[in-house]
Amino acid sequence: MSADTRAAIGIHTVDPIPPATTTTSSPDGPLARRNGASEPDDGPDGFPSEESEPTGFVAVTLAELRKVVWPSRQQLFSESVAVILMVSLSAAAIAAIDRFYHWGSTQIFR
Image (cartoon, rainbow, N blue to C red; front, side, top):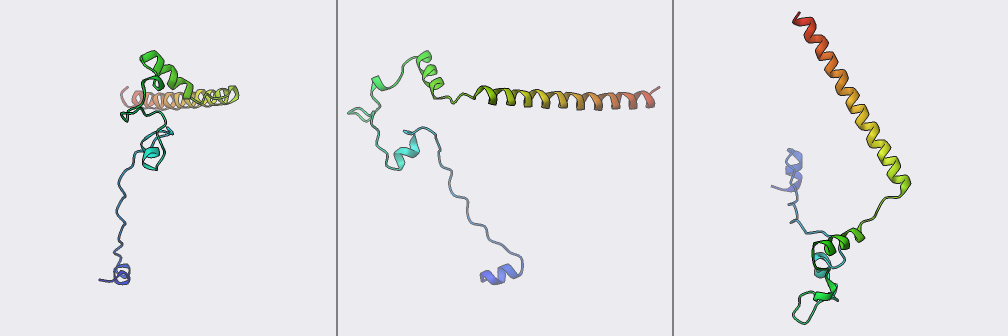
């Protein structure tokens, strides 16, 4: 059956979904290695050298915290106001619905 015939009777073909790929924001992650980037910290055995990696929980945690992009004071304030506003509106909506159902139940079950 040709593509024109399939389209005429409403049969559409879908391209297969490509396989999932691992993405990372790290410049030395799996995608960077696959795309040909060199691994400058590799030792002679192919593993990262010991002095390039932090050891211990606290050292690794601090290394990760140095990578974080912290928000500016203005961004922090505006997003905090938005969160407080949305939580307040949601609470008011839930309270209104609760009062309505309470009123309705008192009307029915007097």
